[in-house]
Image (cartoon, rainbow, N blue to C red; front, side, top):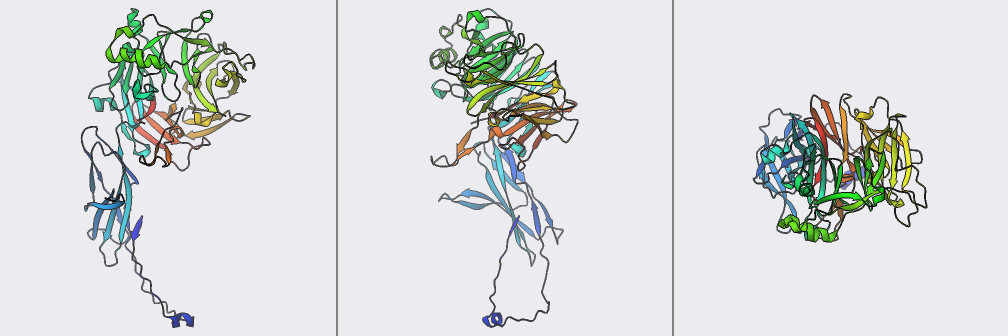
Length: 569
């Protein structure tokens, strides 16, 4: 808080200064100043409407050291705006104690506001405080939250950033005026910020999307408008063509930006893959080599840059892989014509994608573990891609029912290829779960930013295990103050890449500003009694909780099944 004060400086005569002596009688005229304290938040968020103007009221809390009433106070609200010369200046926007501002759908930029309080006592001063009004473009920066309430799927959201985020328990219903149109028991929620073609609008413009998966259906929608993109039956049109009406969705993964791999899903125990173009035209995924053909039950999947998808086969306790499905002409010609114009001639019912294969071994470097059999005592928890020392890999985290330890398997992308000089199955690590933690409640994630580090949660605690060290180290990252709270899920805002923007879009030499999405770790919370929340914290480059950033907890949801972050970039 600051105040405007006029200071008069008086110069004493030279003779007095030179004499070096004066008569200090202690007779000073002291009087107290009526200090006015203005209590306002540093940031006020206002959620924009997609169609109409919305208003926000800002009311300060005032306290004074010498006065109780406010009759002698006057108020002037000012807003910062550019003048005709392009310079910032303060212009009046209100003279009441409460300031009311209106925002149209296109008013997306932050607005600086200043309150000036004039104290009209004889000895009064002027006091001021500044804040920022942050417009929230609906769902442009949001945690989306999948809940299961009263037998139906509910899509909620934390709309906005940090403490300015607005909790919307049923975002889909709020915007669309109806329940989320999907049946079944919810299983997962996925977000893809750049779903579409890597070539953009030449083939299919990229857009942020949300996948909501249940045991009966998959609902794919735009993450801002909630408009449905493709129906699950249309994605698996191949099944209808082959007269297979038994749709049993199990899981899905998509990588169409940065890590361009394609799309893959499992339905009723069978694998299907789609080209990386956002048209979701799936064909059966089959073995690359007929000699390797065998049954499987894939339960976990992870992307691996430059290779494809790494799969875990629960039935045979082994790892498998796919190739990359990124065919420019298929997206530009066949799939585009089929989707946009309904031209059935561009769909091929006899087509298969021959990209499923065993992991194998680099003939020059022996595997540290056998990818074809890690043991029938292993229960896979999660698999995550990492980036360390200029190389990509996948950390597969599982629990052993034999030794009751956590086992982490390292599959190294640098081990694939005819001239590779490293092992594919590069390392295996084990560690004990902290006391009191049950494997049934453990959730695991990782982020490329932190190399070979695994983050896991159980109970009310979050830990990290650093495998970048010669001797892996486990340490406590965060502990919720309520011991009864259960952390049920962990996800980074973006574990694969970051995005940014130019500080001045009109100056190509201006500074590039990163969004730091990979630094933000989110957690889903279970308070009991079908009540849930979302926790968000910023980490440092050393994977510690940033002491200069606020840990934000968003309450108001029902029982959370899954969650994920979406950004319109």
